[in-house]
Amino acid sequence: MVMAVSFERYGRLYYLDPGPHRPRVGDKVLVPTDDGPEVAECVWAPQYVTEEIGGLPLCEGIATASDLDRDEQNRQRRADARVIAKRLIRQHGLPMKVVGIDFVDRRPDVDQLVIVYFSAPQRVDFRELVRDLARGLRARIELRQVGARDEARLQGGIGPCGRDLCCATFLKDFEPVSVRMAKDQDLPLNPLKISGACGRLMCCLKYEHPLYQEFNAKAPPTGTPVETPAGDGVVVGHNVPSDTVVVRLAASGRRCACSRADVCSPRQQYEASSTTTPDAPPLIDEPAEAEVAQTTEPTAKPAAEAAADSTAAAGEPEAGEQPRKRKPRRRRRLHHDDEGDTSQ
Image 1 (cartoon, rainbow, N blue to C red):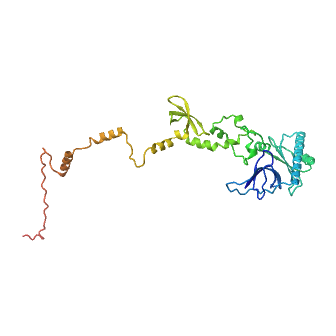
Image 2 (cartoon, rainbow, N blue to C red; image 1 turned 60 degrees about the horizontal axis):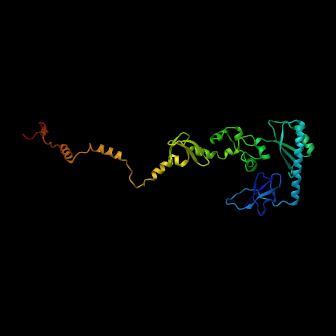
Image 3 (cartoon, helix red, strand yellow; image 1 turned 45 degrees about the vertical axis):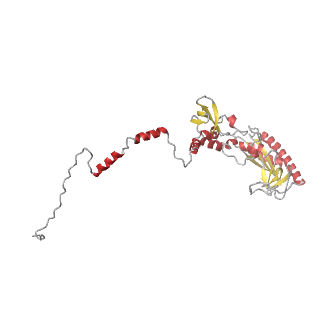
């Protein structure tokens, strides 16, 4: 069985093995982390799945009243730490932006630890800031600089599609995205159109790129003359999501959307071969038969001529032809020596 929890409302989902526990949607459960068990909200109730999923962390049970009180206190401490950090950053005049705050109180090596995530256009000297934060928060301080994509993942937001950011909901790792992917998908190369909330190229360009690569490898390119069920035409565009090709007909000049299988040559060759059965002899066009007849008639000979050719080959004279005289064959004489001659 599998269940899903979230530490923040509309935040990233984490999957757990419920074990013997059966929490319902909205219940607070304990989730194992590197810094100890933390309180999270059950988003998906435990349910069976068809595939075997192993390696999931085990849910540690339903959160008690003391766990809920501790979680509420930590939330208040994180809010106070954010306010103090912003105030000290303004006092020091540092080009920093606070992105997120983590408060850890169950790590065995430290009593209390405050982790401040910030973004900056360049490296920042925050040594004096750390001393002031440790004095104001009375805890150990760690400052971690994050990039633009990590900033969007920590803060969350709404993407151009109107949905929650993928990096803030389900993406675990950021895969490289290039402008070449936008070109392959025939998208405008306008940074405002293909950039996400973080200012970088949208991660969703990676999702459909393999589909576009497969379509472009098999579909005829633009400008190729093709044969469609509606007539001959020229390819003027592609529609990859619907797996169709836009063709401008040569007869009427109008455009029509045809399936990729209808204009690809392998499909046409298959349909042409399927019209004849394997046992039937191959069909020959009539002009080809006429040409074969013309080539075979001059070479054919009647039976009389064939017989005459056979007699001529045998050496018999034809009618009206003088018989040829054969030269007498010269007999070979035996020469005997005088000593060996006994006829005398």
